[in-house]
Image 1 (tube, rainbow, N blue to C red):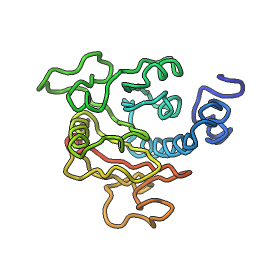
Image 2 (cartoon, rainbow, N blue to C red; image 1 turned 180 degrees about the horizontal axis):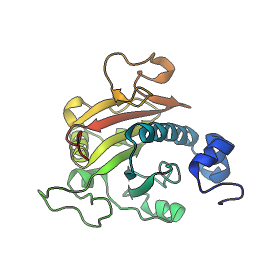
Image 3 (tube, helix red, strand yellow; image 1 turned 180 degrees about the vertical axis):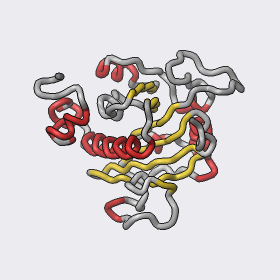
Image 4 (cartoon, rainbow, N blue to C red; image 1 turned 90 degrees about the vertical axis):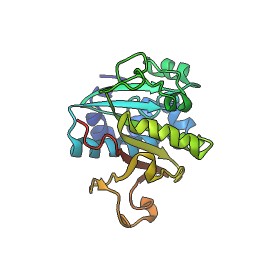
Length: 231
């Protein structure tokens, strides 16, 4: 048990308290300070439920990029076996202080330049190395729109497309536009769980029909073209 009546099982906590009340109990400081915090937790919980149900992974290797103080991944992601690598050049000390976990001080530019270690490694892979272990999911929350130019955004997303299977972006808006030529194919994270084609669902409150939208937080998902069939 943790923090009074909270369980070590995330699924039990959600079922007993509900997502909103659970995070109010666990992190009242972040809940009060960040108006999007509960929405972020809800869209990620919904996404992870659908991801696990459809992909049935035995383990999940997550890269929390622009990790802040851990709002996205600590402690939002439940079983199965999970490993998280966090990276943020500005807030790494805050992430470590809040979560007790390591955080790499890598920027978007560093990742674009090939400085991202593989899951569980400490050094970046050698240039041209083959069979580098992949991240299953890259999560970028409230930060991807901060990349200043299209060329910088392309360089980052192109690099990530070779190092990960899925890209999950959360934001209170639709920015940035991830072009299909940048190595990623848009995915429908709804119950359909398929490539995002056509008009999608109804749009409106559900975004463009290919988003999870809860409490004004949008979650969009892409699958790597390079690693589409990677095991």
